[in-house]
Length: 472
Image (cartoon, rainbow, N blue to C red):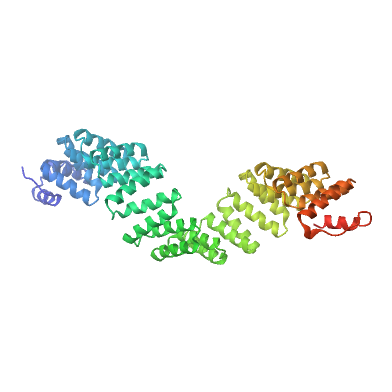
């Protein structure tokens, strides 16, 4: 029987030696099946393995599988081919099958480091991180200085958010190989999560010495610098990332955040809009543009962008809140209240929304509703003396004087050097006819804020006193 080194030689042999009488019909599928069947018979094991490796190297994974299966029918104890089958399944995304074939290879050769390592990576792809860690530890036990195993162990710990353990692995790698650039990158990532910002920046810089065109590394370093409050430096990092890849929308977005942090709001808006050109369905970009316009005081522009954010993400309570504030500043209290209520449906424990809702209700004259809103602010922030003070003022509007006095006393317990709660109590006591207590609280206010003091004759200067108390 003639041996063939490759498929081309086999095809040539078939063309020259075909016996059409042996072919039942001219169906192409049948011809192919016969060719494949005959093909296995013509290959010797060495040539077949060579062809398998050739197809694998050319990434023709589906084509290699029939040859692999035929080989294993004939030689089921081949460690290399079981390993190769696992690698092929890996490449095809058939991770569960790959694990099965790695196990067969390990059973035949329990000391092959490469098989353990590849299986660990596959387990990682399956998100079986603990199993991957156990496999990698096995590799390291067999070969303590296997850099790839230590590096992948670090990645597995990273997936589990065990950043201390991950960083320790990456440090071991760079201590053994100063040029292992990916380990520096991962160190930078881990140090960021560990709030070790200086170390994170140093690690990214080390990586970038070896991979200066890695825009992700420049971007990540910008994120860390931003977290450190070094906004201008972070903008420089984002600019380099953008110079390398100007279609990288996250760099534009976070560059906008950095500009917003230093008050350069129009520059921030330009960056956000560039990010939107690249990713036009991003509710966060629309929201941040709305925030910037709100801070500038361009409330109608802000409403437009908050509305676009809400359209894309109807559960974004912050955009409802931002738009509500803009309506409030435009004296459209009804729409403001609608947005604050929508925001609270999505997030009931955000004290600032309750506070803004109370302000809108006061503006609309809904005193009872405002009292409930202030109570929710105080429930969430019991030490918020501004909320206690405004609550007390609303209680005065509701003629609940005793409760108002208690609210102002709570203010003074939290902020003992603020004169205003004493003036408000003085007002209540004068209204209720408790003149001595009114004077006592007025004087306490003057003592805390001497610039407010004026001379008065209690019998003749009632109007002067009340004008002072009511115009505050």
